[in-house]
Image (cartoon, rainbow, N blue to C red):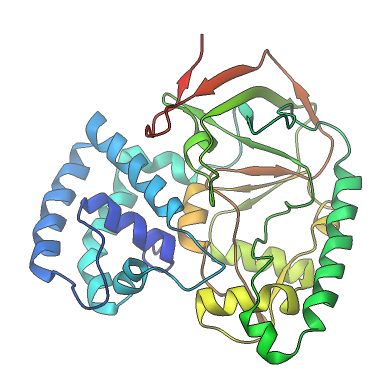
Length: 327
């Protein structure tokens, strides 16, 4: 059974849906929460356009507050308390039962868009070739980072912050795609550690054949992927993930070049993100954190995509959360 409150991002989504202000560890307004829960559960049952917008905005807030390079913010810590989680339980159940969230659990399918955010003069075209070379560069960088961090003494190691993501990015340059909704491509609005982009070029792509896709729909899927294709990153991720989760010990992530031997793509559903991201997921005698991977993103590990249409430009104002297609 899916537990939306098991992970920090799912809990933050439920809190954001309530529309209450952010809280700290010592100012939990139980009466206000109970009143907001009753109202929100009723509104979720209506499943109207206003609630659709509210749910998407709540998703955005959950993603915006993800941070795996330091301790959780006060609101994430406060709503992790068992008393608050129990208050949020009806909201979590109502969110999962709402018809508006049915797409959150759907696998990779349908039209896909590559979103290239415009930053300086960097290219925005999807990198349709060179995936295997890019993954080799990624693996070499992980080896270098583990050696570098492993050479630090204990005091410096604990104070160090650096590599915190587990997605196959930086320095790998792979195609990342997402689906398109009425409001636009999902990835435009839901990006972990966003740089505040206001312009993007979105290119429609599709695989030339039926792709071998791995679906991350929850913590068990992430643990299975890491267990099957393990790469020890205890030295390079340890300082940041210890601060983010409070756990000390060994850490692993998927060895992405090895994953590419079995799969063309790996898709993270919205529900997979909300239940998995930011938590210390047990993997044998180690653990792993799904980090730097946004909801409904698919990473393509093989050169199997082709352009299927003309790129479109999307933009937004610096203080606007909604993106608009540029005619």
